[in-house]
Image 1: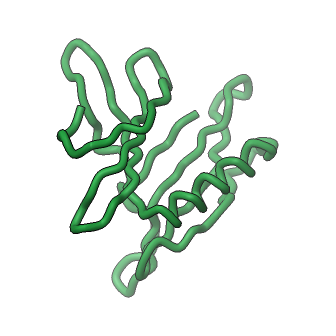
Image 2: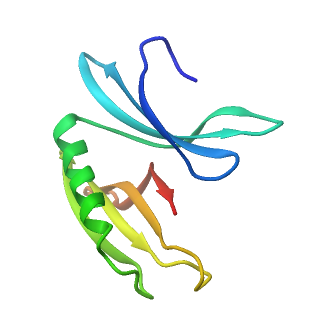
Length: 130
C-alpha cells in the first residue's frame, strides 16, 4: 500500500471498493500529510491518482474547515466553504458539492487551486468524497 517510509494514520471506507488513506511521510526533507484514494477490485488493488499532500499547518486548517462543514446544511448550489493558502500561487479549496439525487448526501471536494499568470483554476491534486 506504499513504501516502508509511509506511516498510515488511518483509513475511511467510502464504498465497498474505495477508501481514503491518510499517511505521513517525508518528501524533500519535510514531513507531509497525504490523503489518497485507494481502490480494491478484481483488476486492481492500490492507490489512484486522486490525492493531495500538505504540510502540518495547512492540514490543521483543512481539518478545522471540515469540522465546521459538519454544521453546514447542503444547498442546491456548489459552495466554496474554505480557501487555505498552501504555498506560492497554490491554495486548497474545500467545496461542498450538491448531490445529483436529492436523497443522497452532498460531496466534499478538497482540491488544490492555482492562480498564476498562465492558469487559474482547479488542479488534479485533490480528493472528492460523499
